[in-house]
Amino acid sequence: MTRARRAGSGHRAGPSRRRGLLRPARTPGFSRSRVALLGTTVLAVLAIGGPLLFGLLDPAVETEQVAPAPTAVAAPARVPTPGPPVPAAAPGPSPVQAAVEAADATVTRRGADVGIAVLDRSTGALALNDEADDAMNSASLSKLLTAIDLLDRGAAGRVEVTAADRRLVRAALGPSDDPAMNALWTRFGGQSGITRVVERLGLEDTAVPADPSQWGEVQLSARDMTTVFRHVLETMAPGDRDLLLGAMSRAPATASDGFDQAFGLLDPDGRGVAAKQGWLCCLKSSVDLHSTGVLDPEGRYVVAVLSNQPFGYAAARAVVDDAVGALRDVLV
Image (cartoon, rainbow, N blue to C red; front, side, top):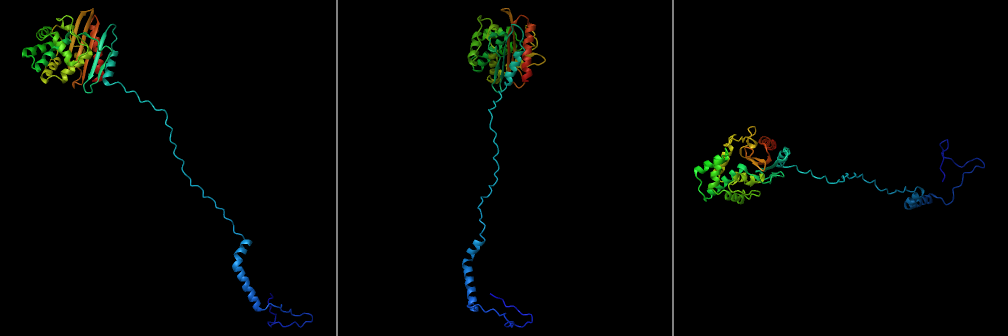
């Protein structure tokens, strides 16, 4: 297709007048109408096949479908692998057991047989050393068993207990008067009274003496004496309980026979609330020395220290004092 070109004079160019320079002839068949038709056709073709043609000339960039980056997930907290189970600490000894162990450790005298028992009335715990069930001569401890039998039978209406009888009980328990005990032993059954107490209280180591007249040779143990005092404190009639505890709490330092009974639970430096002491000499070349009763003002701890030792009251007293002192140090 030619373009018309304007002459420099502004006039429309005519046929060249130069010889040999002829104006080119119009191309046959290309009229304006044909040109228009051709343009329309091209536009139609482009409209239909253009996208395909452009795609061939400039293909679309192929998009690769890329998986999204995974969302960061926090690593699970590391759970510690449990180790082997730690064994629970063994429970320590109860206070009464610790007290008995401490008291038992003080016994170093050669030939001394010392039974130690402690009852915790608030928990019912009873602690014993190896000798706590050894039966020994009761000495004056049997006075308490005889008084219990008399008063319990009186409370049950089986026997009449007079004011004179009560005075005998006080004398036998406080100053530990032997004539008073002789009267009670004779009048109220002697051995049979011990047997009744054994059966009623369930005593395990207590037995009547081989000689019915020798109340000091009743056989009993530290373990049984804690049961005896528990009966006094918890089971007896209040008036009878007060009679027994009152007599023992007012026990003088010097007994009616002149013996110094201010040892063990009656030690002036750490006197217990109520105590019954016992002493007996020279059977089988030994001495029996005992201290039993209530350790503390609240009446929680009942203690019994019974001993059979070689001759020598001074050395025997030191053994009992040391044992009771160790009990007091732990419990009071």
